[in-house]
Image (cartoon, rainbow, N blue to C red; front, side, top):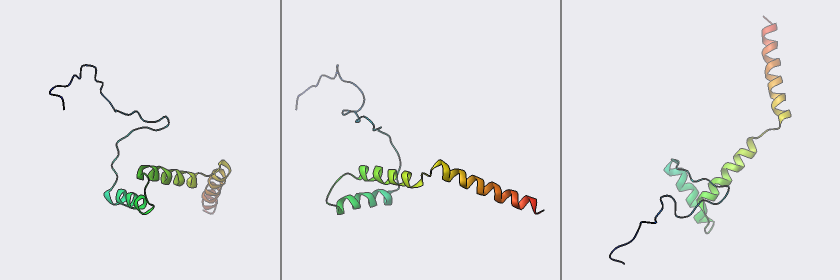
Length: 89
């Protein structure tokens, strides 16, 4: 180690910039959930638990997306049902 270091040209911020399409954030995740993801990666023989969390969230998002047609059908059914209840009074 040097006796003294020159930080006059130093810059604040992350040493390594996040890759394009990724954003560095700080979130709070329950310990048991984080442990579960880490265990999954360990059981698979390695990898990155953050990548696994991203894959899981993306899979959930894609499974919950319904087409415009399906959304419209749900809305129409709800409205017809509500209308039917009102007209019986």
